Image (tube, rainbow, N blue to C red; front, side, top):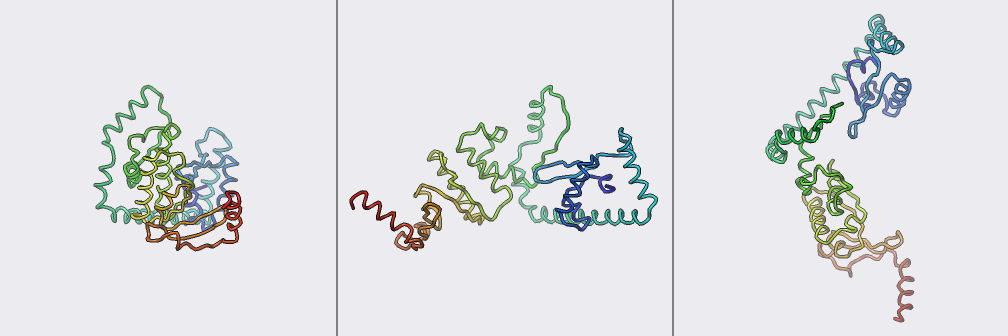
Length: 285
């Protein structure tokens, strides 16, 4: 609580400072929030914690609790030392993060001009914001930065810049599929699992989508598992696995990698032989 009196902290930071597991810290944070002494604030994938009381709180009990904590640090040497130690831990954690961030940006200094070229002129952005707000009252403001330019990069790469201010549910299916893929690769995952990603998409959009998948695989080294009912799509993959009713029937190398269907390994012959025989009997073959 004394740390929260100075600043907001991420839940992970609290766990590091106290040297305790995050589940245990989260349980205690829940108690503080239920008691009205603190509150959580979500920002993207982060959860921040802030104190809701102060010595100037209008509620007498809240002010008294804050005054008691301040007095405890001022009058109890052991408590004061523990608070000071926690603040030193926090300073060290934040210094390490600042150093890591500085190294990250230094390593990518040569890319900044390219990244900045993807961003719109600040004057146009400000004008658009003013026009969007019009005469509406302004409440709490959130600074939405582009960080390393990753959002701008993906908008350009996935050809989404023209619809950046549209709501996802209003977009055509093909564009919505590209948006979902862009969101999936936002944090540069090593693997993607896609379930019939081009279902319902027109042929032109499907081909563009597949070009993007191939770029992700070849250029970014992303391993992609996907399911499809279209054989012309499956043949673009490096390896193909045939499945029926949740069971693998055969696995092999696709034509694009120099394979052919005669080289496929039959891994579940007993399963699909009766199916084939039944089919032959049906057609009289």
